[in-house]
Length: 222
Image (tube, rainbow, N blue to C red; front, side, top):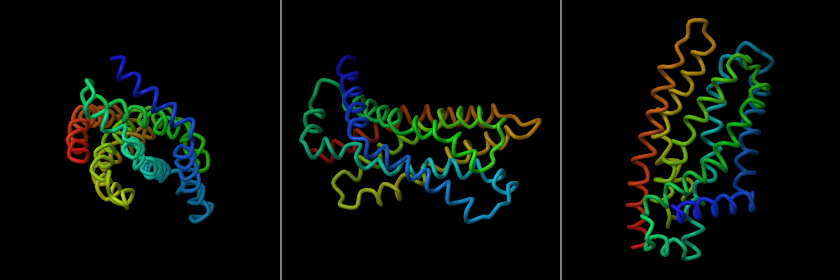
């Protein structure tokens, strides 16, 4: 457990010390959402209707920007080979790194979403559901993204390949995250069904993705 926490703290410290990946993700998210009202015009009703989808899509694309560096830096320094032969199972190392990615990227993007919702005239009543669904769904983004980062570790164009690999896997998270937000705007909307499915997707990715990512890493460093 101490080795797991050491890796988690190390990755968080590196992520916040460098700041480039987080700044790029937040900046990209801000640019995408802020440009949309300019292109659609002053139709506030239209912006309100599309706000959940826009915020979720922008978050997904922003999180993708930092995924290539999930294992790349350790691979370049030779640290990944040491971690692969360490007493801590490689699956748990993947969990620590994916969790650090979520804490350093997914959580800040989630906290930024309510501010961006103001630009899209999002109803205030939907803000609790917005934060809850993003906090519930963004771990799946980090854990599924770890699979793509492991598979494209030695690729020269890893960022593009990661997008091609993991974006189809993000579709269920996107669909149920948006449906939960849409349901929250209805008087008789049942948010719990979509939220429970979203939680199941996150739980399944948390359990299965480290196994797949660890197997891919063993092939890369073997």
